[in-house]
Image 1: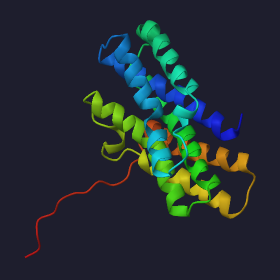
Image 2 (image 1 turned 180 degrees about the horizontal axis):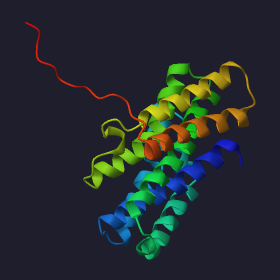
Image 3 (image 1 turned 90 degrees about the horizontal axis):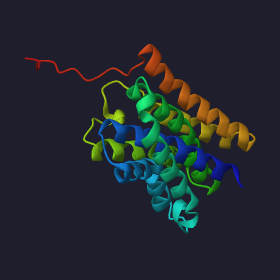
Image 4 (image 1 turned 180 degrees about the vertical axis):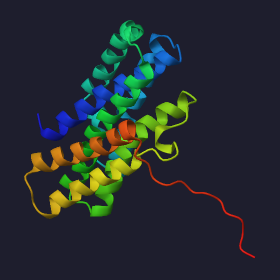
Length: 207
C-alpha cells in the first residue's frame, strides 16, 4: 500500500469519527450516522479527485474506504454516550483529520506534477470540504467559517509546506510529515491558545 493510500485511510477514519460524533449530537438514527460519517470522510477527497480529473475517485476505485467510514459510524453509534464532551472530541478529531487530509490532498496534486497553486488549493479542499458539507447538512455553523478560527489558514500553511518540500526535493515521507504536523500544530494552537486572524470591523465613512 502506498503512503498516499495510507494517508487517505487515516483521513477517512478520523473524519468519519468526527462526522458520526456530529450525528450523535443531532440524535440521528444509525443510517443517519453512516450517511454523515461517509459524507465527512470522503467529501473533500471526492472534490479533489474530480477537480484533478483522476481516472477514478479514490473511494470508487477502492470501496474499502466506505466500509471503514461505515464501520466507524457504527462503533460511534454505540459508544458516543460514554464521552464526557462530544463537542471537544469533534473539534480534536477534526484537527487530527485536517492535518492528515491536507497532507493527502496536497500530496496527490504534487505527485501528479501540478503547479504550486493547485497543490495548495487541493490541500485546502481535501482538508476542509468534508467538514464543511457535514456542518451544512447538520445545520451547524461550519468550523471553516467561524470568525478567527485557524482552519482553512492551517490547511493553507500546511499545503505550502508540501510545495516547499517538493521544490527542495526533500524525501516524500518527510514532506508529508512536515505538512501534517504544521497543519495540526496551527489548528491545535487555535483551539488551545485562541490563535486567530483579525476579523473585519466596519468603520464609519470618512467625510
